[in-house]
Length: 201
Length: 201
Length: 201
View (tube, each protein chain N blue to C red):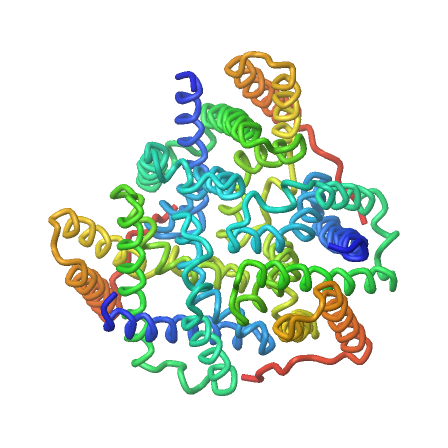
């Protein structure tokens, strides 16, 4: 893949690991727990995708760069959690990760001949399943199921990618469009506090 | 497989998705969360079975019918949760799903040359693991571990299937007997409020 | 593998199953729930390792001995939970399991050509992931993320195994050294109440 994908992937890995590590610190975990939470948040989604696609061992176990980034980030957050809390920049990094992880996921799913609906699900899993495992390990209901436009941005972006791919457009352009749309949707939704509908029982 | 298996499979998928979606609504999840809970409840068990059997990508990702049924059911439950709450019919549908999912699971496990004990476990996982993931994502202890005759009916039915299969009886008859026994056990146990023993510490 | 590995593996399986079953009893689960908790604690880590290593079906589904040991142990604990509570011996058995499971895991990972960091992670997953699933199914934050020297002993022991393996030393000697180091670290850490650093926010 093109190198901008690798750069955004590294930035996203950092942001996801930081979000996991921060919750670990808040839940009074020790340094091992903080690193585990950072790791699963950053690489959990990609591992589940690769298991379902029968692409084993998972990519991240073959090329360890993301594991190393996630461990180092988690240790930095453990040492200095205030360095990232409430930082606007980290929100943008997280949104970039959301976009690029979805784009990579849907692209791999299509390479493995998944259907439209399977590709959307796998792209979205790549981006959000790590955060869900993070919340389950913190004994909380996953945030992504409860509030904000987050996973739904992935559904929109990955659907668009699938359609563009059907049209035989250039893959790296498609990856960029998918990543960009998800990033923009996430940023706008957050700043305007958009929410998906919820039921009042 | 015979078509009655497909029909019961579709009914069970609907019932399992509805049970997941209903919990999502009760836990104040947004529509995305409700669909995720419906989906994992309906298809989670089969995915874990296929991963263990090395039958990847999982069946449900190759034939998407169950995914589509689960998503549509979840959206209907989100729009109108009262339509299914406390409905006797849904209890029967759920019990049918319990039976047919177990029967499909144990049959696939035997096809993959699993042992007696492995086949029982995989049949039972097919039927109950989705509901366990649903409860974990709701930050609750899985219901199936705590009360009622539910998974234990699957253990009985799948053991019977394994024995009948050893006797070289007709597979579709075995599937029917296994499904029927589990359905009946579940219905009787529920109406008589049978419980497995629990320890008073 | 040598027979002492098999003996320690059986002892560890018993101790891990007992720890899971005991939590099941305390959480007021029925006998089915107690057996499930014992089973996942004993065999969950090895299954995740085998999925990641693409060594499917998982070893424990091909050779059922550990499954049988875990089920029998769980039923005994259900019948007589006081027989194991607070017993010093079970702490030692658990520490042996921690050591030998890590050693088996890192050795399999190296056989599958995993990197240094991948091998450490897989060795540690083999030893601690079952206990993490146990705690998640009990709606608790995994103990291993919060306190005591537990998984960190696995990281030390498996790192040592990797280095010894690079030096082409005899594998069964390496397995023994790795198991022994983890056992000793765990026992000393527990008796001296060593803790990993935690952050005060």
